[in-house]
Length: 123
Image (cartoon, rainbow, N blue to C red; front, side):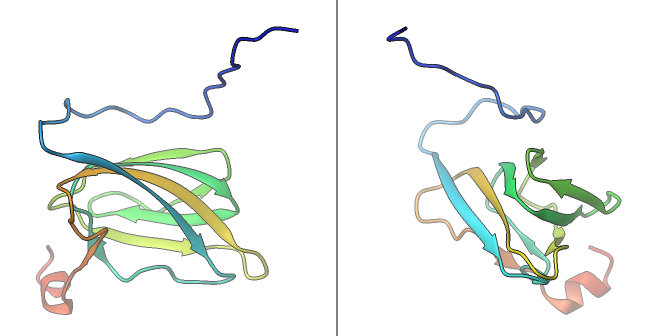
């Protein structure tokens, strides 16, 4: 029996630039109840790398088409000015969940909601 750890790459998403000094990596678990529409349109304080651990999620970023992310799939969001439009649980009778790691300033909110006026202006 080997005493070496086993490492398995679960998924990969395109990279972004190196992390500037003073920022942190924050990892969160997001669990969506059955049929949940997810959070209203919002922004994240920095880039986000995510991995769907269970279920199926309807995912859409500003300027991109809707897509379905299933358990075992990864995604990337640039954060900042890009609006996260959709993150709904597509399953009516089961939870969906994802793990996301974002790069941000210490104490930054996980997300900031976007106003209806801004959405209406075609932000």
